[in-house]
Amino acid sequence: MSSYCLTHPPKMESQHANIMTKLKMDWMHRVFASLLLLTTWSNVWGQPVGQPVDFDSEKSRSADIQIDYNVVYGQPDEPMHRADILKPSSLKDGEKLPGLLLIHGGAWTLGDKRNDARHAKRLASLGFVVMSINYRLAPKHPFPAQIDDCRLALKWLHEHADKLQVESSSIGSWGYSAGGHLAALLATDPSPDVPRLKACVAGGAPCDLTSIPLDSNLLKPVFGGPRRTFPKKYADASPITHVSPDDPPIFLFHGSKDWLVPSQSSISMKEALQREGVDFEYLVVPDKAHLMTFIDREATEKSYQFLIERMR
Image 1 (cartoon, one colour):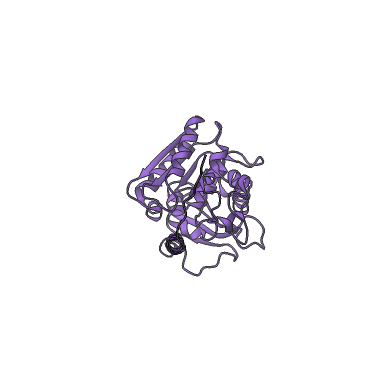
Image 2 (cartoon, rainbow, N blue to C red):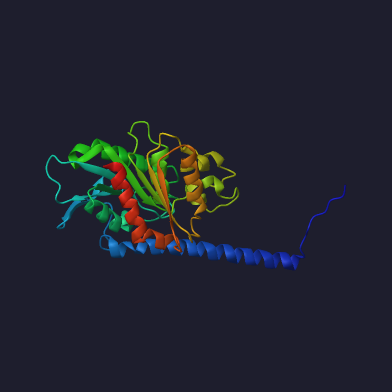
């Protein structure tokens, strides 16, 4: 049996390499441009630009919402272990409300709780006590530091439930993009020393990291290298890996034109939840890309309604 291989002339190989490099760089620039743009929305919805995240807690009260900024939920000397606590100003002594852990996105490498300020305020106005957190970021703190901090924050929320007037048996998670991934991982791979979540919302979330090409270094800053080198780390970090029948209700939403986190990620997660008989809803946001889905009011309002129905 004869065999042959296809080769290209040196000039063609060089042209091909240049084209592929240009396409790769263009795609990476688009990724980081979107993430930076996502961060700048906090200027509109969040606290004033330049407010530090590591100073002592301060309070703010509006007609509808009380906010405690930069509450320490972990190590006092770790500046990322800070949370904003939001609750309705009308909350009476002795009254308790469902609690919600809000987790920002940013590819596990950037972002801030201010990015989710609009969502946090809206959820508080709907009758939730919201804990919107910062967490340690890669590459300085590789995975699993991010999920470790989310679990630490969730444990802190349970331990302080009475003081915060949170119904400890009704605590959920909400996140988008990398935050959606972390919210879903809390739901499907819970810490043994913390009760299960009551419900979860994961928007635009990369739920199946095992679908990333084996030799891609895209997530090297997060996981230390490609999937071929760290197959177990990628699998363990994937919410889809841990789906089981006792998972809490999960709401997935994804833009149909999301090129940053392909919608197949949520479709695969939906199919896994369906196979295991988990209560879920899946919402496709028509003609919306990653950023525009994050700020789509109809989609986010439906996610809030899901939490109201499942947690009260």
